[in-house]
Image (cartoon, rainbow, N blue to C red; front, side, top):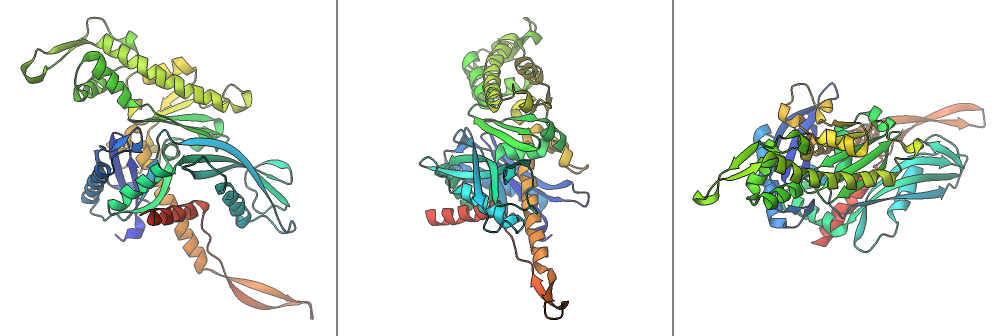
Length: 443
C-alpha cells in the first residue's frame, strides 16, 4: 500500500504512548491497520521532561505499529497537553479594500493571520486560532461569511496558547525518533473529535478527558469550541495517594486502583478486605476496600471540582450558555468504577462515558474502542482530514476553469481562456510549516 493512503496519529501521554495507523474506508469510517503502545517514561503531567526516554518510548510504539500493520510510518500527527496550555478569547477585525467584492478565503486567512501576530507572554506561542462567530458590517452571529458583501469583517476567536519550549521538545522527540511532524493538535480537541457527536456539540457539552498526568477539558456550544483547559492532575495522582496511604509500591497501587478501586466509598462493605503480598518474604498487607475507596474518592472529588470551576468560568450557569448535553467522560481515568455517578452528584449534570467507536469501522478491535484510546483515535482522524484537505487542494489545482471575456465592442462574449485554480493552504498547514522551520532553525 502506498504511503499516501494511510495516516498516523501519535498520542504522547504521561502513562503510555500510542501510535495508530489507519485509513478511511468507502463508508467514511476509519479502518485501523495497526496499533502500537509503549510505557511512557519521559513525560510528566503531559510535558516531556526526559528527551532520551521519550524518544525510546516513541520508537517502541512506532515499531510495534509497523510490525502489526506491515507498513512504514513517515509522518505523524501529534497531540499536545500539559499545564502550560491556556486559552483566551479575542476579537479582531479587518477593513476590506473593496466592499463591492464578496468575502473569500483570503479575507478569512488575513483575519486569522492577524491574530497569530498577537503579543504573547515571553516564551509562549499560539497553537490554535479557532474562529467562533463572524460579524460583517455589524451584522452579528454569522457562522460562514464567505460569499457575503461587506467592508468590515470581524470575528471572535478562541486562541490556544502553549509554551514554546514544550512545543519544541515534542518536535525534537519526533524528529529524533526518525519521523516527520505532520502537525500538532491540542489533545482535548482530538478527544472531542473522537467521542462527541455533532448534536452534542450543538446542544452544549463538556468533554472531560482524564489521562494519567492531566485532565483535559473542552466545552462546545452551538457546534463551536467555547473553552479549553488543562488541569495538571490525572490518574497518576490517585495511584500516588493509594501508594502513600496504604504504604505499598506503585505497581501494586495501580493494580488495586484498576481491579478494586471505586470512586464511591458507600459501595464497599466494611468487611471486604484485599491482601497484598509483602516484599521479599515480609508479611502480606491487608487493606479494606472501604479505605481504598475513601482515598480514591477524596482525590477524584478534588479533580472534578477543579474541572467544574472551569465549567462555571465558561458561564454554564447562564441560561444562554447552558450545556444541555451535560458531560462526557473519556480517557483511561474514566474507567474508574462509579465515577459517572460521582460526577453527576457533584455537578448535577447528565454524564456519560465517551467511547471512540462511533467513527471506527465495524470490524475494529474491541480494545481500540476503549476510552483509553480516545485521544489517539482523534489524532488519527485529524491526520486523515488534513490529508484529505491536501488531496482536495491537489485535485482542484489540476482542474482548469474557463473564463469568459466580454468584448464591449460587439457586445458579445468572444473569447474563452483557461484559468488555473490556485492552491490554497489552510491556516493550520501554514502554522505547521512555520513550526517546522522554527524547529529546523532551533538545532
